[in-house]
Image 1: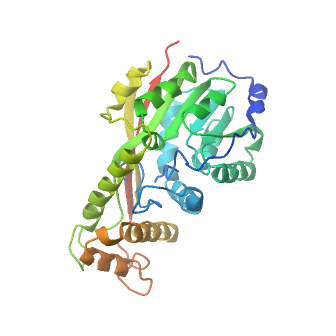
Image 2 (image 1 turned 120 degrees about the horizontal axis):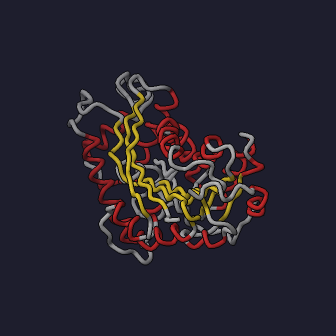
Image 3 (image 1 turned 120 degrees about the vertical axis):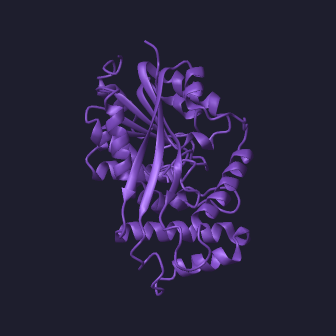
Length: 331
């Protein structure tokens, strides 16, 4: 494989701090994200409003908190990738957000240079700061620009391109995958995190309100996601058969695997804070589309003084599954 062809990391240093004109769309994690982060790859309560415009920079603290909470899932995914991708010289995180996962790549692959690519300059500033704090700054670069075109600015092909819940923010996913594949070195791997299962935080029956709250919220998120996709420029409807799409991009050996995050009850304070933020965003963002009874339930769940709230009840947990799809560029 060609993962050892780019060991000259000094050349990759030329990418450091390379930025184009900042743009207003972050093509990724909620992306961290992705992270999502939810059944379309991330929970759409992650700052997604009742409309479909997303203020990614304003979401930075939430994106970071989410990715940090989901770190065990990402660690499993990167360990799996590491069995296929050996000694990569350049790793590109396409749609990196604030760089939590980008920095994990730097940790898991200590010989690699990591390039975080995103449409939001403020999020990339946070990524650089995080890399510096963790001691990865000397082999960590950033690139501001819209995906997939921003990858044309890379001076060297990548041994691994990771698109963690960023692809579904691009109108033409098939064309984006082809563009990603173009930027791979021969033998390089493209890894796409998309899909999985809806995240769960609560028992089906809370002891008040109508059972099945999260399933009804899932339905609202599904409608939001469909509208978000429909509103994207150049949107192309596509069956999301990732093996077929990766093969159409000229890649081989497509495979998929899902990774579980299981944080059982009682939840930690950090998990409770994330869950409260998650449900608070859903309550605020879905507005009048929420069933009045479900809104009343959410109000109780979010009231720190209520013993039945997510802040105090002992049956709150985090259970999520995200899927990763990979393929390799022929040598």
